[in-house]
Length: 161
Image 1 (tube, rainbow, N blue to C red):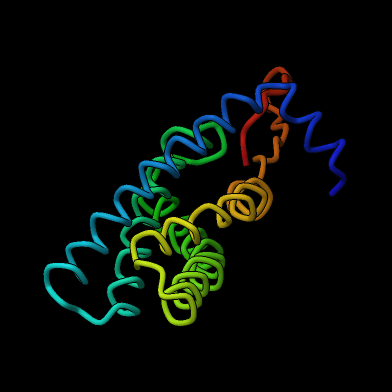
Image 2: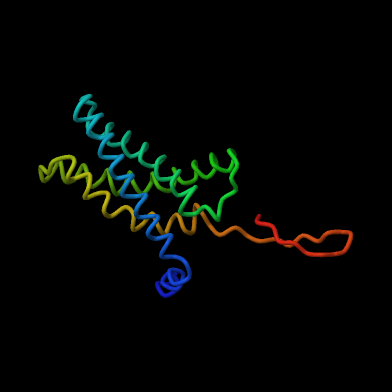
């Protein structure tokens, strides 16, 4: 995908999507930090397990926001669709989060002695760059429109597939 194409999409309503994506992601960051503080800082769960729990809860939070706000025009509002897309989103986003976020969390705390919450924020700064593109094209692709012909008067109607 060319950069020019991505910039062209931003000109046509993409700014709202970009802003929505980042606002939801930053609230998800706060959710992640709160859960990490609770699980590791308070409950003393080992850091990598607490980090994984925090990431998963933030993933579910972010998906729900994106499903109902960011990409609301690309989903079918059914429980089945929600769960299937949540699974797909979880696989894509978790892959990025667990590689980028957890990797940076471990590297910065283990090798550089950075405080775990600061290291966690550093990991979360890089993840959204990859996740926006992955969500736009893999998780929430544009719905295809199909034309149906009515048998009586042969009129066409459009339906989102």
